[in-house]
Structure formats: C-alpha cells, structure tokens
Length: 356
Ligand code: NAD
Image 1: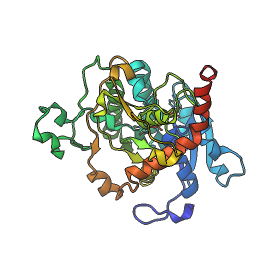
Image 2: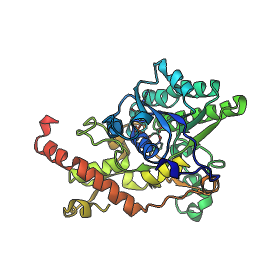
Image 3: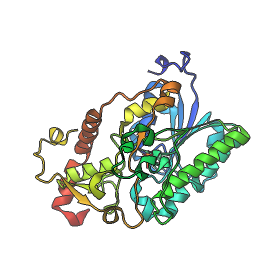
C-alpha cells in the first residue's frame, strides 16, 4: 500500500493534500479509490454528489477515514472553495458538464460549466501558488485534417493526417450553429487561460485530455439512476441498449472513430498520470445494431469528430506510461459491471414502465 510507491525519480512519495473538484464523478471516484488504497495522500473531495464515493466515506472505521473528507459544494457559488484550494498542495479539477447530448441541447450550461465555473479554480491556484491538474478533453482537437480531404484520397490513411499531437495538431471545430462544439470551445478557452496564467504568472499546471475513459460507474443508465430522457456517453448508451435488449443505436451510421481506454489504466497515468453474451448468458439479437441520425439521437446542432487517435510520444517520454488493458478486456469488465448493477432494475422498469 501507501509506502510502496515511489516518484518518477525513485524517491518515496511524500504525503500531500489534494483538493479534488468533481471527486464524486466517474473519474474522480476511481482516482479517490486509488489514492486511498495506494498512496499516503489526503483528499478534500469536492462535489455536489457523493453516491459514487460513498464506499470510501462510510463507515468511519475505514483505514483511510482520516485521509478523505467530502465537501458538498457547488463551485459556481461557494466561498469555501478558495480556502480548500489554499489548504491543499495540489488541486485537480474534474468538474464539468461532459456528456455529448448536452453540448447542443444545453449549450449555455455547457459553456458556463466548462469555462466560467472553472475560472475561480484557475485564479485561486494561480494567486496562491498552487499546482493545478485540469481535466480538458480530446474533443479539443475537433475534426482531423484528413476529414477535409476527398473521400477517396489515400492520404486519409496516412497517420500524419489523423494522429492527434498535443503540441502540433490544430483545433478544428465546425460552424457556430453546430452547437456541439460549445464544449470543445469552452475547454479550449480554459486551456488557453491556464496556459497564459502559466506564462504570465508562473502557474504550475498539467492539462489532461482524456480519450474516452471507460469503466464501472461511468455516467448513468437512463430511467434507472439518471433522467429517463438523458443520453449518457457512448458505451453507457450501448450498455443501456444491451440491458434493454434493444439494438445498439449507431449515430449517422456509426462511422466516427474513437480511442477507448480502461479507467484503471488511465488512473495509473494520472497517478504518475465484454463480450456481452458471455456476461449475460443471453443470445444475441437478430439485428444487433440500427442506424439513427444524429439529429434524431442528439437533436439539432450536433456534429462530430471523425477520428480520435492520440500520438503517444509525449506521455511515453514524460511518464513512461502505456495502457495495458485490451479493448476486449475493458469491454468485458465494464459491461459485466453494468449487467451486475443494472439488469434487475431494467427488467423491472421494462415490465412496469409507468413506475420509473
Ligand atoms: P462526471 O460527470 O462523472 O464527473 C464530473 C463531476 O463534477 C460530477 O460528479 C459533478 O457532480 C461534478 N460537478 C460538475 N459541476 C460541478 C460544480 N459546479 N460544483 C461541484 N461539482 C460539480 O465526468 P468524468 O467522466 O468523471 O469527467 C471528469 C472530467 O474529465 C471532465 O472535466 C470531463 O470533461 C473530462 N473528460 C472525461 C472523459 C471521459 O472519458 N470520462 C473524456 C474527456 C474529458
């Protein structure tokens, strides 16, 4: 446990206090688990919800009980935030509205959450000389250069035209009326602000751009532990379809490409930084997928990145990190969790639709 870990120079890790904003979400819950189980660090876990970290907070006899404190607060309007950042050595900001279905349907909330609400966090870190790890997104790259080439161009297969590099790839978003880009644009602006705070005021920072992190506790299942009309991120949508024995909805033909990574591998990186039939034992559907237009699925103003494949040079060089879990294994463990957690509730909801 705690004492076994060393830093990148091989020295034992000194205990520090981390102010983790958005600690009650998907990534935050895994990060808190890891920090409690494998490091000596203390965590101020800040969020408006704590359901996903309840198992770390109760009972008070847990071995790490004195190392994790939950602070229920909304960073939009709570004067306690600055005090917590000041008392911590490091702030990790995970708080955001970050489900694609919200980007074009709730663009104002999306922009406020990803830009305006993050401003005080950056300001307090900068003014108090505290290091900030801010969670941005791979959406920041937008579309690949290759997507603008003619459909039959062989250059589309050339990695030069699609691999996304932190320090070289441009951020290519669609027109303003494609409100889907409100999220990426707000994240880009907060990245630029953090960068500028670093350049002008010496803020020490790390910006993380996750590429679809997947695993237990991701998002919600509509009508079970989230709003029935809500649309979670892609794998949670697929598992909802699978649990309800509906075909998977493939938006606009399902041609967009993503890179998926298992949450536990990704958390390893942060710390430095299925298939379904097998799980449920049920036979596969005759039509396992159906096509659906993005307008029908997400509403007006949706648009998409064609391909998201990261260049690994910088993270290899700086952290010596590579993911270990195969796509097959991460699907199996994630969908097994989804099945174990939601199958009974979905069966009940389907047999009694008015009750949910
Ligand atoms: P999540 O929605 O599960 O967690 C975000 C948490 O922030 C939630 O618990 C929410 O209650 C909290 N929060 C939001 N606004 C708040 C506020 N005003 N005050 C206090 N708490 C607030 O999301 P996640 O998947 O854990 O993502 C965390 C971060 O990583 C986000 O910034 C997201 O944009 C980024 N990201 C995640 C992925 C991914 O694959 N999960 C991909 C790209 C980017």
